[in-house]
Length: 443
Image 1 (cartoon, rainbow, N blue to C red):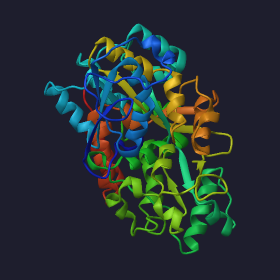
Image 2: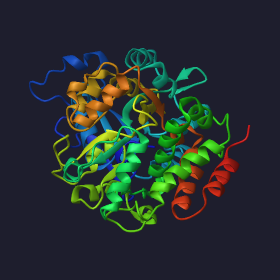
Image 3: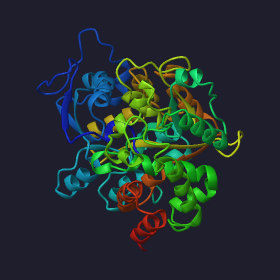
């Protein structure tokens, strides 16, 4: 599933025109006195132009994006009009069909981006953007934004989803060690439950995208139990959605998340997670009412204000373990920038977003992960971000992209998400998996 606050508590819209001073300025942005515009000379001058951007990132995440490209906007003269919407997946389709497409959209699902590319709505990446993409990212990452051999977008944000957040003090006070195998993880789970604390907490409510944290869980466990090859076959529908190995993974997740003894710490019975916003899902870890919260690297943005991250701080994270200590499968996701317009200022903006300079500047402003090979993990804002970048850059990592994001949008962002909510509410595993399988688009 997706990055950051694209999954929101409520439906709101934030429209900001970025200028050098952070407020609207008629006729385009202008550089500040003494500002060094040398780094942006390659993008040309586009005074008086506007580039509209539509995405799911809101609140603090939106602010950090705007702060990052503010100098670019000022030096090139481009006003970047940003709109963040918690209902991005549904609204982008309505806007495009209604003739109101943005110049640039940040897609959290490659499957959704592919739909627009196949429909001829997206513009192919320019030669400059394609060259930057080849330089900065692996073939796998570029492949997520390639349709029929044509590159349409570039990776903007990456995340590692296979993290379990925990309180080091909680573990230390109870003599618990960070587990390195699935069996050890279940042993920790049982010990915490025996102490009277529900070991797991979660929130899966996210507006139109409610359910994605559950699909992440299922994908992560399938990747560990069945391996990368089976995972790939499932995502591409070479094996059916309701394959017995998928059923097994769902039941394994259910043994934790549908178990009232193990979940939902700090909130109530296990099924309560369906009404808990994902941003709040891990909060009980800080108060000691829950031991562990499986969530992506971007969850660093959602801890209560003042929460410190580190091995001896308020919270930290470990990689969700596999069957043995040597395997290191990693589930991740990302956001891709793609354009509906082909004007010079739009191409310049998309080119800037594709650089390691943009990724590094954004990293220095707050929690953020990039899979760009040109970024230095040392520039990461948190230790978890640093670990994420190191994992993404390590050729030994068995990385796989979020399955629901790669599936056809009607399935991944539709029946799978909805089915997961029905499942956590009490519906059986096989009926849910069978229903999703029946919904898969036929050739």
